[in-house]
Length: 423
Ligand code: HAM
Image (cartoon, rainbow, N blue to C red; front, side, top):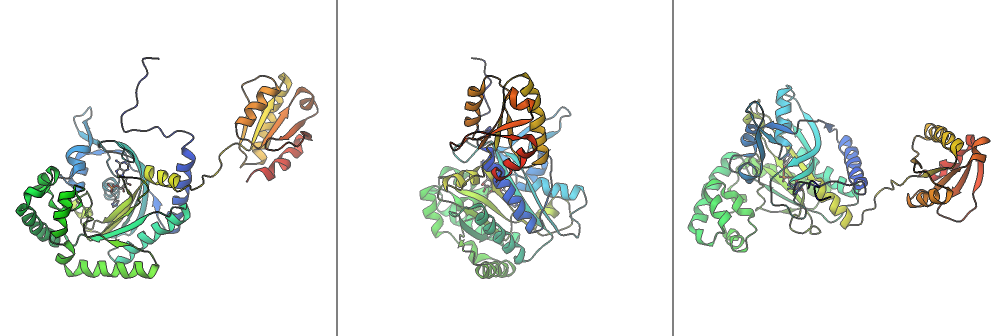
């Protein structure tokens, strides 16, 4: 076994023991999204590299150093999507669905970033991404956030905190950017290496540096909230009133700037203290300029993406119970006649009880061995079919989680007997 092919670093197999939690998260999320009118869109995992460079921004970490890009056989540069927003806008424009229309869409699937893998940070990870197009007012910002608060409640997640900020209009941000860069340049010796590099290319990112010295300096830096345009200030104030009215608590964090360039006005992040350094479980914001930037008619837009791995880990940390996926029943068959009849009986039961999870033992062996496997499967009931029962179309009904005796019942009453054991 020395020739085993290794998995790619930072890319995980989600094993069958883990998938019930993923499925539960996905199912609850789908129900909540439908309750707010969001419809699913599925877009390709591969896009032209240019799409991400033009939307996420040339001088962001993602585009500069994290994309999985390659040339295909035609010599076109393609990229495995590092996020979903750009592809969804591209799909909206390609299909003529972002012209004077309101759209509420969601999409889910794997994203790819060549980051340094650690707990909660992977090279292939999964997002559930939600976007609303054509709505300029703070009410949709508030509704998206309220929807997330409802989702956390439905999922049983309690330990998350909401942080919000506004980045202002592109013009206000550009003038703030110059002021900030001038201030930071004056104190360049206190900056860490990464922040020095960003000083010219993307000084706003210095604001969310994790480096202690840089953070101290940032405390004294000019505050973006003091340099806002009136429109953005009013929008942000209105959002806060709506959140207050809805009873959603939040912290205004003027240093929340986000790592993608397309944002303007509202940005937000849900963070938790339960997962270590990779603490953001859901992030997003408004990107009113992106549709036009990608060639469409100007159209406001806002959205967010949840990190599925991180939410699943948080649910586990918080002890959120997972719905039971063990089989309800396990069919034991011993003897040639019972083996043939068992297949028929199993199908009859599945036909009558569409919710039934029934495993038919196909590994052979005697009653004792098969019953051992029945027990291990987690099933509540063993259905036992020997030659004698098969001949008279009966089946043994044996509860596996207590010590009651096996009773033989006719096939046509077996479904009714099983029904109470399906939750
Ligand atoms: P983002 O902040 O880059 O935003 O990612 C959103 C979420 O994806 C993060 O909060 C985190 O939970 C998860 N995430 C990001 N990178 C990783 C990783 N390497 N491993 C595991 N989880 C990760 C966006 O992607 C924007 N497109 C969100 C958005 C949608 N804004 C507007 N619409």
